Image (cartoon, rainbow, N blue to C red; front, side, top):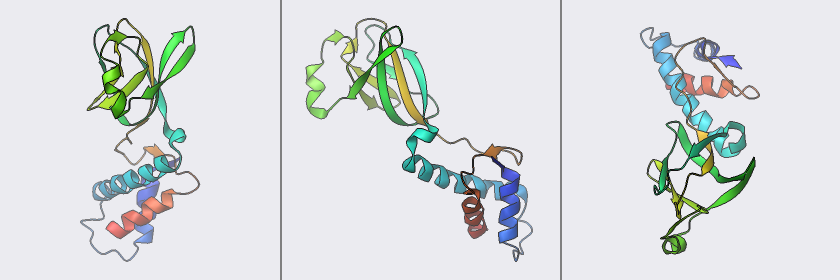
Length: 166
C-alpha cells in the first residue's frame, strides 16, 4: 500500500523543473492523481478482474423482475441463485433469442442487465437469494494519507502520468 501523498511527492520529483507554483499545490495534483488512478484501475481490472471483485446478496421480491445494482457497480462478473443451505447455482446471461421464453413467473435461471438493475428471467414467483459478483467502481482519492494498492510499484506509473499532466 502506498499513500496518495507519496504519489504526489513522487510526481513532484519527476517534474523537478516544474515552475508553475499555482498548479503545483496538493489539491491540483490530487485531481491529476485521481485522473491517472482511474486509468490505472481500469487497466488492472481488465487484466485481472478477480483481484477487485466483490459479492453482494440481495433478496428478490415475488412478482418483481428487477433488483437494483449496487451504487458502486462497474461490471458484473457473474450472478448466482441460492439453491439450498449454502449451495448456489449459476444464472446464465439471457440471450436475445431467449427473451420470449420466460414470460411466466417462476424461479429465475437467467439474468440481463437493464439500466441500473439486474432483470431476472423468469420474473421471480417467490423470494430468492441472488448473489451478484461484480467489479466495484474505484473510489475517488480524497486525502494525502489515503492509501492505494500500488501492485509491484505501479504507483510510479500514476506519478509519471501526473507529471505529464503537470
